[in-house]
Length: 106
Image 1: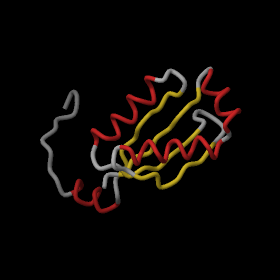
Image 2: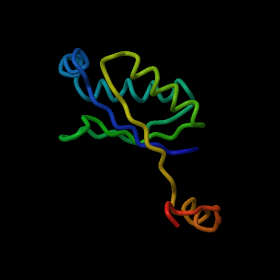
Image 3: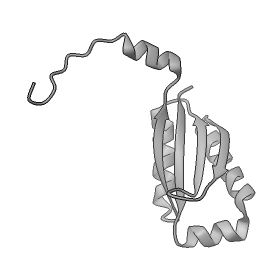
């Protein structure tokens, strides 16, 4: 299954909800959200800095992770960014491809 990094920020009432429910409860919600589209939550970590929560998820396809992103962002209480993750083997395969490209000005 494709693997993704989800970077989340709690916004407005979402922060209040996190304080009220706690981090563990919110991660269980994320786990259930992933399962509802056939995916799994590999792990979740709260952090300081640009994002409040980082999750590694396995999803059946890009449509599933897009649905999770759309649903979460539509709440207005959490914003998410989704980053596709590639294995070293996938990079090896990509390195063997020869795309046609001309650099600007070249």
